[in-house]
Length: 144
Image (cartoon, rainbow, N blue to C red; front, side):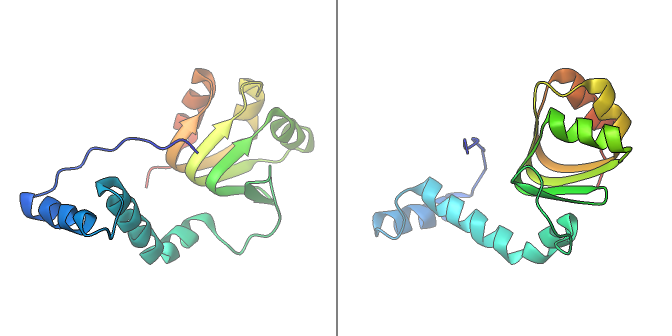
């Protein structure tokens, strides 16, 4: 997955400590240190993350998430294609989408069908979709 650039402010002392650890060979670079620190922090909050996505749900959806009844969730990348939306539309299913990471809606998803199958959306992360689909997601997105 493509990484994204983040700008942070650190005190001179914090930065000097990181530089010292890099100079000692404990980390390859400042970025390496910050990535590892971020990973450790997210792992320490794994319970909160799991509560968000409801790990009790079983099954697979699009190879990257889960679908049971109307709950669709993903941790990492959740991809939804036109075949998934069409199936939900055909069966009268309403989708409750929850994702942490990236929600990617394929370009060929019909916006009207997508709107008709949505129940709720809760996204923490990035949305990759056509502008009209993004607008629909924003309308349904539950604010934390």
